[in-house]
Length: 318
Image 1: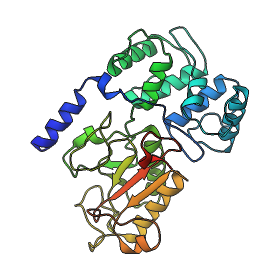
Image 2: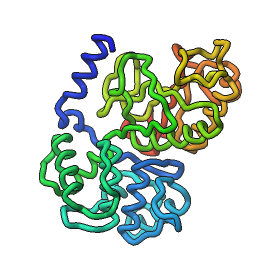
Image 3: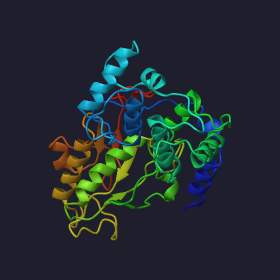
């Protein structure tokens, strides 16, 4: 890691959590999203008496979840649009404390596991381990440390970025930002992980990750964006399937596998229907096919931008 990158990463990761969380908000989830926040919503719907389908909470915002959201919204006097924005989140989340035992506690536990890299049992019991995790998160977020999960704790927890599962992803480090740059919004990782799992199953190797963002967003060396948890860089695929072990390539390289890269792009889009804003990558064939968009300095990586139906920054609105 360069001195500049190390300094920037150290400053960000050691900054006051209260400052890092000053603009915390509920990430909007809707049809086509997947990931930890969707799974939490599904547990919360079940807690409130609404079925999300025979399979139960699976982290996929499909038709059954959309129907359950609309029914919940109607019952609470909200606009029944099937979109879980700030008002619907606020109505869904209850106050939780140690001793509670219900489906909402499962929502809390899955959020804590992915946002704080824990391994709590997702059993719906607000036990001592969950209480400790809540208190540690509250301290991390710079909010009142009382072990009670109210509106402020829920909002900060849902907003907090998640860390990826590397089962089907390999961690590359092109810009010297290291593992500190592997954080992104829960939906972004849920959607990319799904695409990566489908791609890996084809036997063409794992998906190589460049940078996503820092744990609480903010400026990241080597990037003009990647500050809002919805930008993730991946490398193109090689003909020798060595994208996780061999050198970095461009779309002009002899070892560049256009067919496999096209397949990966299609899987990225299919895993997040309606939630891929764009993919920057300068292969002219893929641009002509409408799969990617030209952008300076994107010969050697794909920049995937995910989006939400509601977001404070218009650049991330679907």
